[in-house]
Length: 110
Image (cartoon, rainbow, N blue to C red; front, side):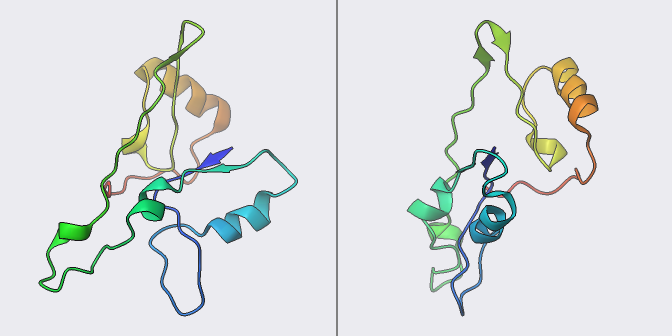
């Protein structure tokens, strides 16, 4: 499983920007293979640091997503309806297979 979407690590006294990698790791370690898409916050975690309050230091969201594998279309699902990618009929098929409980609409943070 690949967990992503603005992940961060909790550090005592500091607020995280997204889900907590440590909590995810505790919940799934030893149960499934794990990977983390931590890139955005790992390389640029300066949101809110501009003294004028401008978004000049906000991280850029630069993501490459697979579109096909072995000649078949690839699908990426998310807990946000807006972030699913792939052919609509395939997205719907995988949502039927895996379920869509807890999936909602949220603004995209880029």
